[in-house]
Length: 130
Image (cartoon, rainbow, N blue to C red; front, side, top):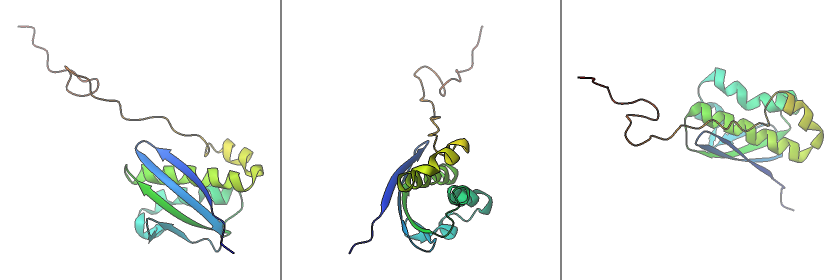
């Protein structure tokens, strides 16, 4: 009998995280490495376990994540969204608690594109009157 995975997708800025949850001991691997090795910043890594702490499911699921694009913070927030979505797929009763903590909201803010005739998205070239 094959173990059943629950998968979900999380995004933030340009980061995309594919999250796979299965019942287990609470191990988390990100791109084939342990999460504390892949994300060595402890105050940001707290956000990885936040969905489990809110739903009282710490240590009940093994997490396997494939993440690409963006920086450390964007990747962590993408993973948190993916884990939250997967927990809702597993148990629909988790939805209200995760929603009040704003863990099910996809943050739509992206980098604004550069426009032609300008130095950056909004910054203009220096203007000389004379």
